Length: 263
Image (cartoon, rainbow, N blue to C red):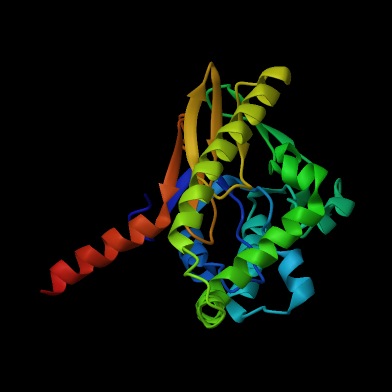
């Protein structure tokens, strides 16, 4: 930590699933994270901009623009910035091999850590069977999620008028939670197997909004999470040690300290 500026310096930072262009994006929290954390390498591991949502309705507040400008400034100051597009910003894959303002657009990249370990960095959607083999279903799922949040109350009011019983959201979510656990497990296994096939020490990805770092039979699986719900990032220390940073928790702790100091 730089004692004068309050900035912590890492060798590398990975962030993904920011979903700029959506109301769920925690752009202010990401800006705060970038303000207090710098690195030699910065990896943008897909779904930075949500092209799916922007095509349906335009939403781009100043904070979202500030995130883009902050990243570009990072590149201008000498950070090595790599952008690995995901499925929500797949249009950027047309520019793989090019660089914009110092940001290099790549399909994937091998990162060599300070300790010599090699990691495949990929968004991960190509290992998601729903996205890979039934993209239309994934698009419907994205729309349905927003729809469910907004109309559940009205839906059940209509069911009562028609003589039907209440449709339990909690039971539905419990079922989906079980399915989600199975899905995440299969996703992690597929990525770990790809790391073995590529003869690397680990894999770093995003896509499923579930921050995780664990050994999978000799392969280190790392998911940097997202900036819609959990607000997490993966960082590499100068020693090569990797760590998941939960910035929402950091902010809660910071606020708790402030309140105690003011009491």
